[in-house]
Length: 261
Ligand code: CAA
Image 1 (cartoon, rainbow, N blue to C red):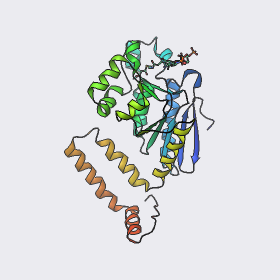
Image 2: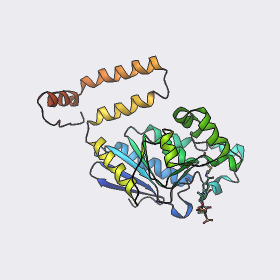
Image 3: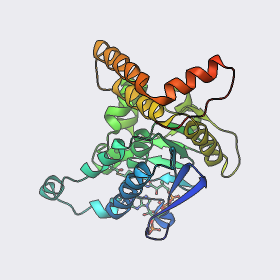
């Protein structure tokens, strides 16, 4: 919508919000003003009852080429410390609704980290993932070292963070960074992400958001705590109408009509 300068917000399906990074001249470099808009758009979509799932994408050439290097180059330690630089990026992971990243082209540095903050990543064959911060005399600052270590393990994370080498879509798929590489063709990855978001949005939304919460808990809790948390949330869903509807519909051999309650 028109209140944003660096992103586009659209509704490709009645219950799917599509957020497109739109700073093409800078390959969607994630400046502070851009990220502020991104946070705002996610807060709005999360609060909108008609939205069930979100898709985040960039352009064919770049999902995002990282944090804005020109914005950062003159900053001092005291600036980034006092202003809590990049701390506002954590807002995005508070989104309750599932976020699917549709990645084409460069997803580097903060761009790779932004994709990793999403819940599901679909990659086009052109996608290139990397943490090139080492070439700038720094290290990842948006969660890359931690999220990658959880997902692809120590050796591969060390290689990415310490050499700065880009990883192809195929390699990212083999390493488990992305769900899958979709077929070729412009816009194909966004199309498939929207289809997936539509599927998710057709389910009972209390269960969907509970599902996201428990999967994410696996990255923070130990196994015993995680299993207990999952079971508690599972028990809690028996208080919803959607559980009664979903199980009755199965027994009556009909399609469920979820009311998100
Ligand atoms: N910040 C600011 N501007 C950027 C940018 C970035 N991260 N990435 C690209 N741009 C700008 C370029 O400066 C250039 O601007 P001008 O036209 O004004 O010169 C424009 O986008 C187009 O870029 P290129 O001419 O470089 O395009 P290319 O096709 O030759 O190369 C690229 C593409 C390999 C992605 C190259 O742009 C590149 O290496 N970008 C930087 C990647 C990077 O180091 N990212 C990590 C940033 S640090 C970080 O993200 C910290 C963190 O953990 C949060």
